[in-house]
Image 1: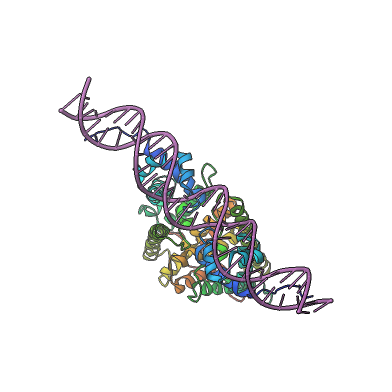
Image 2: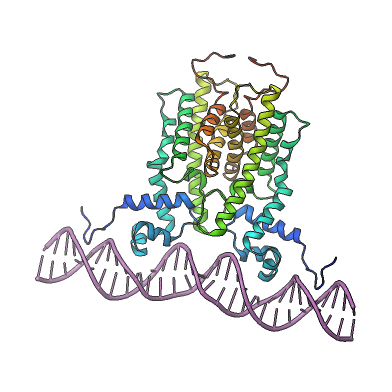
Length: 207
Length: 207
DNA sequence: TCTTTAAAGGAACGATCAGTCCAGTTTAGC
DNA sequence: GCTAAACTGGACTGATCGTTCCTTTAAAGA
């Protein structure tokens, strides 16, 4: 069971936490192995031995992010909630997380790998992050579909359009947070985005 | 009047166009001077002589962008239009521009300088782009204020919140476009974002 | 035509990049 | 205690980064 030889002297989780914060704050490209070495206290050999490459470390760091701060969006999969409530909670929790000053601003997934940079690993990173964003989008879409099914949303609702509106707003929040937008404006904005989505028990028109 | 000495043999506009496309496609950091030299056909000396630095060239390229493709958002300042119409046109035109395949995807301003990278010029680029985004935001806010004044928007509208909703969506469009979102979904999304904003002649409540 | 001025071409700068390799060290199993 | 395995620290690689410098070339004003 236990692999023979000298066991590693560092805790993987701690390394991933430090790497995540660095990538989160500076992005994939702008973060150098030298910075990662300093932040983790490890040598090149240890890092490459454990993660294979910078890209490998990044992907593990993103997984660590998804299991940590990034997990706030998981509420959207809670089928015990009404679809509108699920989306609303997802947006507000994400805003709270992104504006939390105990870690870097914005969302690591929303901000990484948008622009197409040259180089093999850059392209791979871009694909990975685009895939993660596509997952988020699919989960929002599922809620919109449920919303139409439960009657919260009008039957003639453009599902993909409405999904793009919610997802677009969520993605834009990251940029706004990076630019210093106050949390309260963003919470109010989330409410405004959902204004067209009536609460399950709400009347169909008027106040 | 005419400066003595040998005149430059290249057209500034052409160089800016090439540089703009490169920065647009790859971002500031990922674009190297070697690529810029190749794309413009100029030598280091010519580029540095004309623009001073990579950062200087970038800022000129951004100005060139703002005067070209980026000018689609200028409709928002057209006071002859109703505030809602101005915002609607701005969103739809921006979506058309960003999905136009005759140039790189997305919006150069929305995608550049979000994450805080180390280095002096990186920080300067980030500040510059954040300022440009702040200008966009201010112009949207002005429309929202006008909307409340004209009665298109309810008097109790949270102005900053509503502004953040519109601006957040606009910023998020760039990421979606980079990920390959179809234009039609985004146009439908823009309509959905504006659903809460009744047309000027619309009734104040109900259908 | 001659002088002045600046653009153009291209080699070269130190710094930094991701990644590799080699001793040296420490542990698990026998 | 011994052997084998794997981690550790640090020097090191070739490539590329943005930028500078120097020489050559060409056009404007006198």
